Amino acid sequence: MDLSGETERQEIGFDTLVEWLHDREGTEIGVSMQGPANGGPGNTGLHTRGVLRRAQGMQVIDARPGRILRYDIGDTASIQILEGDFVEADRIDDFVDRVTIISADFKEATLLFSSSASSTNR
Image (cartoon, rainbow, N blue to C red; front, side, top):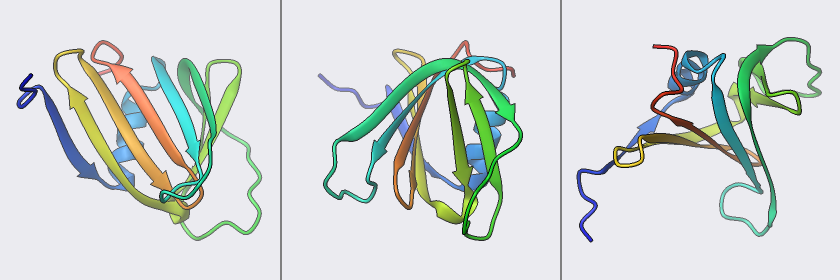
């Protein structure tokens, strides 16, 4: 089956990741965590789905320089993303299923964010 033209992948930076999350505040997204990052051994993971909300109040010890952002996903999970831990990210748009996935590598983990085309505030 030829899938060309049905998906598109592009490398994005930390600012684009933050903008993508901002555009989805108040809508439902999925978030998965897989660790460790960088292809090392490990089978630790987590998945949650819920409404994305920007959160305040966090404590980070020995953080690398850069922005620190916290988000709540539904009523059960929170994530912190640190600009100083950011390595790289890719945005994958699936035009058939109308889903966007962001695969973001940080120093110690990979985060996968997903949302459907109807889950944007734009």
